[in-house]
Amino acid sequence: MSGLRIPVSDKDHIEGGAAAAVTVVEYGDYQCPYCGDAYGIVKQVQRRFGDRMRLVFRNFPLTEIHPQAMAAAVLAEYAATQGKFWQAHDVLYEHQRQLGGELYIAIAHSLGLPGDGVREAFESGDYAARIQDDMDGGIRSGVNGTPTFFINGTRFEPHRGFDELFDAVQAQLDAVR
Image (cartoon, rainbow, N blue to C red; front, top):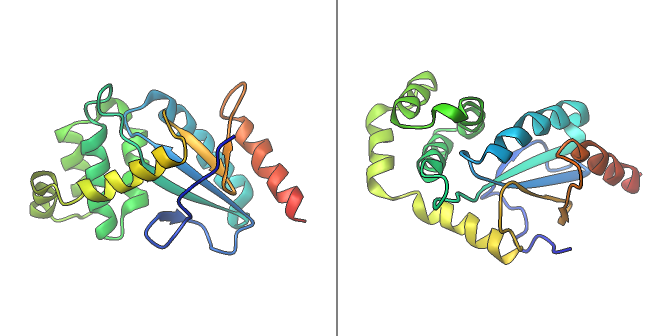
């Protein structure tokens, strides 16, 4: 099993406290149907473990097969500059089948993001380097598909489905007791 090569830092999108016993890092693609399936489970895991776990999300848009993945990542990164990353992240996954310009405008409006800022985010390419940094880190860590999870730095390989994430997080919590 490969490990996480790029440590979690304040550059990451983190939900949960730094003192959490378990850190789950997800490399994801907003258009990936498997990421969409995992999204609901990740939310359940977060509710179950609360402040004992923190979630880190890193972009890994597979643009060759998911033409809206990069644009969705740009929107999420722009939202992050306005303190709204997790809200954008959640809405993008919850409306994954509608990804496209109309949805991005609706999300921006619902989150109170400046319309001219959203337009500039898409036109400028300013967020491409941030997204590429996430992807490069993923590649260094052996990521070759999405979603890919690391739990406390170790790659999580489900055998039957993403619901195994519950047991894997619990096992890490048991190990630190």
